[in-house]
Image (cartoon, rainbow, N blue to C red; front, side):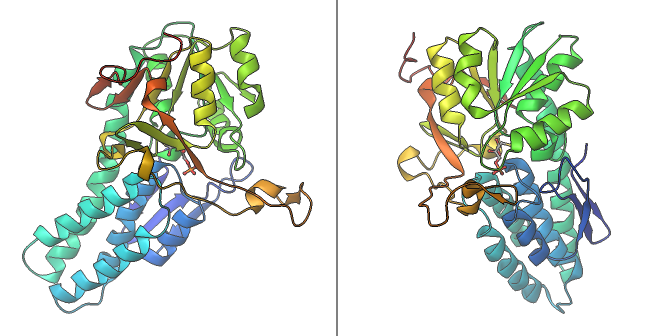
Length: 339
Ligand code: MRU
């Protein structure tokens, strides 16, 4: 399922807030539309956020009425500044904006040539994302055995990327190799990306999936129902993986039960400039916690915490699967607690 398309100055996305009940496609015409889409999570998932931001810049370039190159450069810088404020944790957002802006700065010639280069770069990045996921999937599939039940958290599938997915790409690639794989999808409160998005896209592809609430992870692991865990990442810093809130719980429980815990993420998710000490964790609206959908479940006036991501130390990660191969963080890192 391709989640984002460019057609002659219009970007079409599926509004992920409405899935699985409604599949609504939305047309975006300028970077403000794109900034809204990222902030409000019509599009979400680290790689898709990155490509979306690149397309936000492409929309600016395509529709610009600037007369000269310098004027267009200024418009791109303004759009980039707004897009950078949309969500703080997924490093792919900043990676993508930097890449397009670098291309723009390096492109000599007229305003028209600059606009064309920016649009082309965004298109290349979208296509590359699919290619990257397929490569990652092939590497990752070597870690998955025929008959495995794989647990995943949040949504790191087609819906989090341009297509195919990172963690779900590994599962898709294993199935394409002829392996019989079952998936356990954690609900992923508060926004329930696991229940709403992972279950939706796996069922759409006829991949066997069972939904559990996040509170059931320990029980199903203790009952021997999970062979491997594969999740995505929003940012991999020098000593930890930043991913959807609840990932750390899953990782600690996997270590406790001796279940391999794998992270699948493209190189664009790596951030060697930071450690867990200076990780930026997005805090979202309290209503995501006090409400389930539109129904309020907590008393008025309750104090709420709502960090959207958590930090899993690399000592809990058995392998990081990328498009360049598989890295084993335990090499040179602390041993896992149960080793
Ligand atoms: O808040 P979200 O839905 O954007 O968070 C998404 C995740 O945490 C994913 O696991 C991560 O971006 C990896 S997606 C391939």
